[in-house]
Length: 68
Image (tube, rainbow, N blue to C red; front, side, top):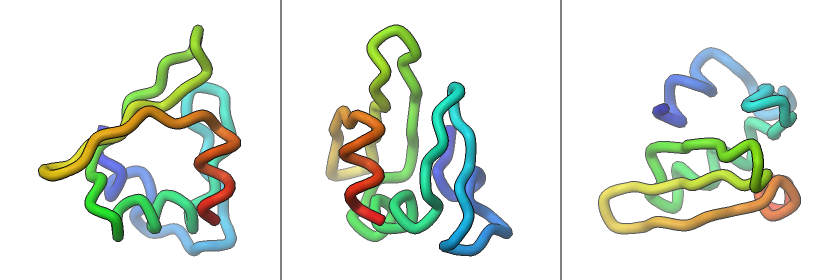
């Protein structure tokens, strides 16, 4: 799913719930600034795969929250 669609219309102080995990909008915006455009949650591993045209990565909730 596209990160832009997930955070559209929300401010940086809000959180969204994705796969049962609360993620800060501010952190997701920073990922977009770094070139990431898509996110896919993996419930069993409790990780999130993110990618864009020139980047890819797999992050835990804690790693995402640190970017906010």
